[in-house]
View 1 (spheres, rainbow, N blue to C red):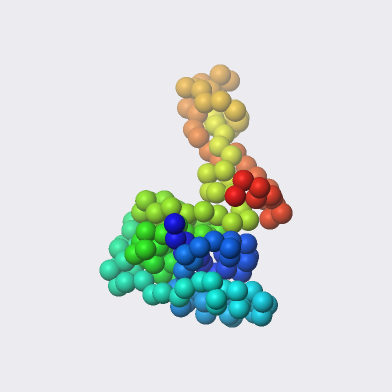
View 2 (cartoon, protein in one colour; view 1 turned 30 degrees about the horizontal axis):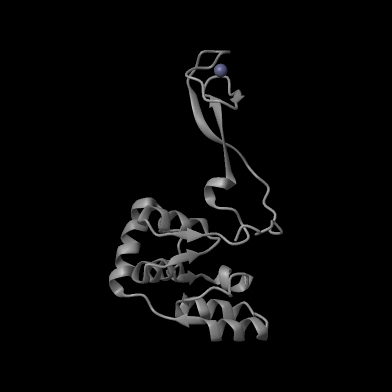
Length: 168
Ligand SMILES: [Zn+2]
């Protein structure tokens, strides 16, 4: 199993014990610009192989991001991360939800770091279009006013970066 790490993944320093780690030259530049500790930087430089994605993969990712509406939220560096993962068939390690979303659409595997995955982050609820009342369960129509019920994000759970990673 190989991994492509974005700058958030590299800077977290969390997963640097994995095998077969890759990043793009742009990601490494970003990391250097964030002023990492010498220790972290030397760990990255010895453990992570720097590779550029192919033009074909970049084109493919850009086209898909256009379709998913993520293209404006993705930097060229993000596109490079996705493209390299596509080239290598690697798992992406990132906390960036736009990268995760495009990876998902592309059928690429990804994993978050300190944050839970995108699906776990959103708690879904059901809300009446008419009176606006929230329900925990889906109902065909509102028992109060009879309007349609739609699925809506109830609340974004508070995320603690200190959450444990015991199941890794
Ligand atoms: Zn209602």
